[in-house]
Amino acid sequence: MKKYAWAVSFGLALTAFTAYISLDTFVLSSAYQTDTAQMNTSMFETLKENAAARESTTEKETKTDVPAADSSSNADKPTNPPSGGSPDGTKPKSGRKRKPKSETADESTKPESAEVQTDIPKTTVQNSDNDYDYNDENISIKMTEYYRNNTKIYVADVRLTSAEYLKTAFANDTYGKNVTAKTSETAAANNAVLAVNGDFYGARESGYVIRNGIAYRDTASGDDLLCIYADGTMKVVSQYDYSADELVSQGVWQAFAFGPGLVRDGSITVSESDEVGRAMASNPRTAVGLISENHYLFVVSDGRTSESEGLSLYELAEFMKSLSAETAYNLDGGGSSTMYFNGQVINNPTSNGKIKEREVSDIVYIG
Image 1 (tube, rainbow, N blue to C red):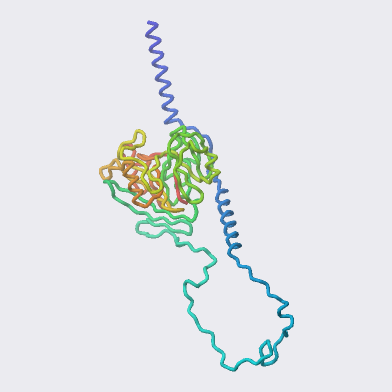
Image 2: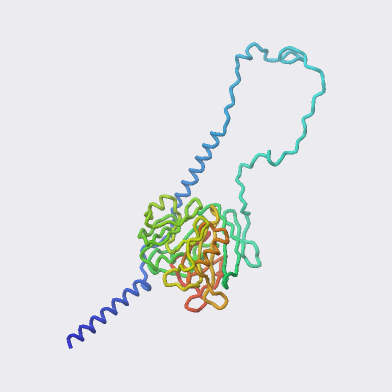
């Protein structure tokens, strides 16, 4: 009888422990830091100072020294020439004065404007029929919908004057574990023009978390790390090569630890058999990519519906490459995949077989 009592007690204890671990991992929330709206914008000030210093150096190098006039060679010459004569006292030759030739300025000879011009028009939201374009003096967004691999895909082509307008935000303005909110709610709370879900850092205990120039977590997960730098570039690195603080010191503005990297230096870096953890072969997907400095791609696909099958990682990588992405990275997908633009969700997020938003721990946004 004692043997059975011990077995029952052990079984109950094991069940309780397993339930606690499951709740602690997937349900119970813990707030590690609140009021996380602050941003480390000092790296942008450093970039401006460096750019000003380079410009100053370039100006100094391009200046030509004008030799000073030799006053001794003119010492014996009269200050004013004799009336009707030239400075050496001789009469000038008679003849008509020529009128200066009128010239039409050639475009190549026109002086450049002192103000640097941008190709981003200073306008508000355009295309009022569908609100799919947005432009102001710092942000240009062009929205396009595709249908590839039996899947609807939403693409935001984003051009910025500075990476400072590519921001991130935590759900409920709180960095923590299992602290979640809908992408649309977090986007609206931060006045985002465009937003997609992030890497759902709060569902994991490891993986670097660098947001808006601040390192929140310095525990490596071994996965590919996407680094978005203050100078407008993007790179996929190994978390084992640097600490989070070292990356911040190198100018990393945002870093995500979901992965994997999809495209590096214009080449696909996943195979047709690669997949994320327990994910199905075809899924709703979220990805971010870079075409050139401060020229980004935000991509979200539908999936798990009769209208949209979803994409494999390799299909997503192929699609990103077809958009001329030099670098591309996979963020959290499945039920998390959400794209918010101009005040509304424009894709069809799918959670548990229903079209609805899943609550996530973070977003990436433009604003």
